[in-house]
Amino acid sequence: MSFDAFSDVNYLAVLVAALAYFALGAIWYIPPVMGTTWQKAGGIEVQDGQGPNPILFIGTYVAYFAAGLATALLAVGTGTDTAAEGIVLGLIVGVGYAFTAAAVTALYDRKPQPMVWWLVNGIFNVIGLVVVALIISVWR
Image 1 (cartoon, rainbow, N blue to C red):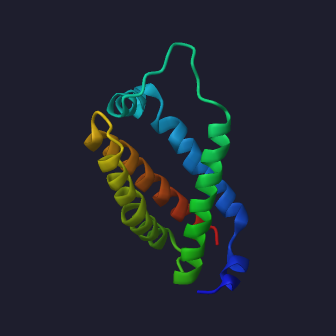
Image 2 (image 1 turned 90 degrees about the vertical axis):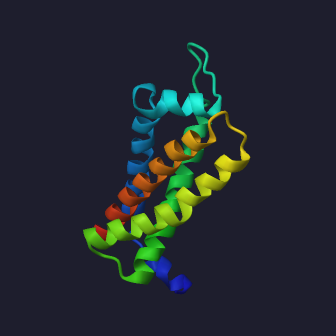
């Protein structure tokens, strides 16, 4: 693969895929879904009326865009252009990088419930990257 692969990327697909990843996170981390479990596992206490700094959302979207771009480059390099191939690519990237990185982070972050912390974050990222790879692969 060379830098020429950047010209073969569908950047609109990457933007949309990053937005889908972001939307999935907005749902995944609300209290009724996994938010309360995530907070308890991480020892995070949120006061009533307290919300996150809006800059966190910008940083999160930028990170998801970078993950989408990397996934798109892998899709170009591997010729991934069907839904089935996109799911496989998403699983490889999700499990191979995100799930394992979440495991290592959970080992060292000293969270109250590291195994739960790992699973909540790791599973979210695997699902998110499958969605990203699926969108990018079928929209090439």
